[in-house]
Length: 160
Image (cartoon, rainbow, N blue to C red):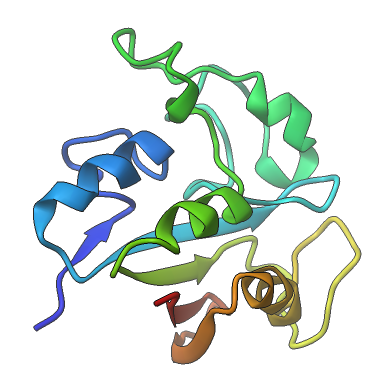
């Protein structure tokens, strides 16, 4: 059985942050599961919720925010809120971090209103090709694991 740190072991660390991913390295896991969304300016970021209020001190949605706006937000956790690795990371940052590990990355695509196999330049969603373009820069390999009725898509990628 392969064990994944869900959102970077979200039960113990602030989910989908570089802090959580770094802490997960000590767990003896097979991989990390992350959630990816597209910002208003087309940047792929790692964040589970489509809105900001649960984890961060901002309001509104990821797809209506620019990456610069998201990067200014702080985690609501008082102890960790000003840590640089507790910001919303980009998919690029996560790939750069994980490439030197033996971990497998499981990517769940959010913003499920629009999901196509082509690049989507709109602000409403993104295509599988958007993810592939970013991962191909890091020489990752894709394996589609699951597509459900709501058009969320899971990809498993080994960067070894």
